[in-house]
Length: 253
Ligand code: PEP
Image (cartoon, rainbow, N blue to C red; front, side, top):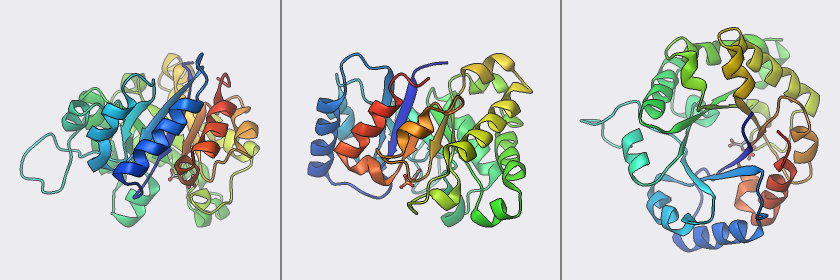
């Protein structure tokens, strides 16, 4: 297992001056001997500026999405190669907001994963069920479909540098977090899906939990054996709370 990972998904938030203040506070508060890897994922337009601000801080840069296409007549898209060019190491793919609000299908998410991976980005693949699906007892079926759509499109070896984020849709931005036990059950299930194809890749794979993670609940979540860090939305915009989450993840892998 690699280092624990905490990624901040800023969503549609930020400003040039506010971003610099936020990342400077985060960088200043992170411990020197870090056993946690920290990533921030701002809106596309701020990536080049932040690549400069983050230089030498040890904090990595990620994008919130990526095109499935490499280049050409695809107005409004941003390719994986471009993201690498401006200093990104990670790209989130298949966030539930992209799936629900912008119609991203499992097939498109799989193509985005492949595009990111082949350009040298580390994809953070988001999966998770809605409340209705959980109430119907369909959590495993939904998560299996979402993970296998990608594993059937690429090789399991392509997961060697990837990350999976389990984000129950009912917990995102709602303040309602999955219990550590609920999250652990799904994380173990996801690791099992990957282990069915490669035990070695599954053992090394980092599986993050996302959904209303805060400084106050992070430690209990990250203590679970198959939770290797967090994908954090709202709390990633507050340096003090984000730092508490990072310190909870430190050494948890
Ligand atoms: C997210 O957007 O990935 C997320 C987990 O958001 P929040 O932490 O605000 O629930």
